[in-house]
Length: 192
Ligand code: GRF
Image (spheres, rainbow, N blue to C red):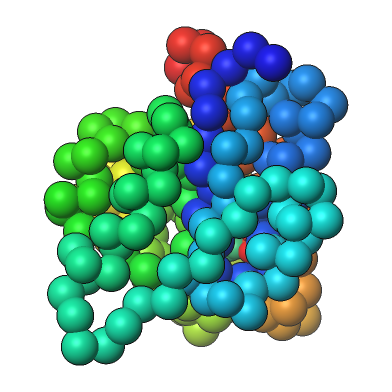
C-alpha cells in the first residue's frame, strides 16, 4: 500500500476511526493504519479496531505521574511502529508540548464546531446552549494550544429546530466521516 503509516488515537466510540480505516481499505485514503491507541482500555473503538485486525494499545494514564511520563509509552510505540502521522479521533487527553514537538505539524485533529468558535470538550452542547443556527466540523493541525492550530478543512452543519444533542451529534458525525478521510488524503498527498 502506498501512503504514510498512521496512528489513530481514540478515547471512545471510534466512529471516525472506523471511517478512516474503511477509507484506507477501499483505497480512497492512501495510508496504512499501523496502530490504534486509546487512553481508555474500555473504549469500544479498540474492539472495533481489533476486529479489523489492526494492532491496538491501551495506555492508562496514572494520576501521580506527569503528563510526559504518561505519554512516554505512546511515543515509544509510535517510534517502534515508524508512525509518520498522528491522527486524533476523539482522543480526550491534552498532548504535551514535548509530544507535539516529537511530531511537528504531523498531528491532526477533528473538532465538532467551526473553530475558533466553541473549542473544548462539549462543543455540541455549547453550540445548542448558545442558540446558534449554524455549526460545523473543523480539521486542523495540532499545535500547543487546545483545539487550536492551522485549519485545513471546515464544513458547515445546520442546526435545525428541535435539535437535541444526540440529533445534532449524529448530523455532525455524518459530515465528519466523509470530511476527515478526504482531508487526510489531501494532506498526506500534498493536495492542500
Ligand atoms: C467527534 O465528534 C470528534 O469531532 C471529536 O470527538 C468525537 C469522536 O467521535 N473530537 P468518535 O469516537 O469518532 O465516534
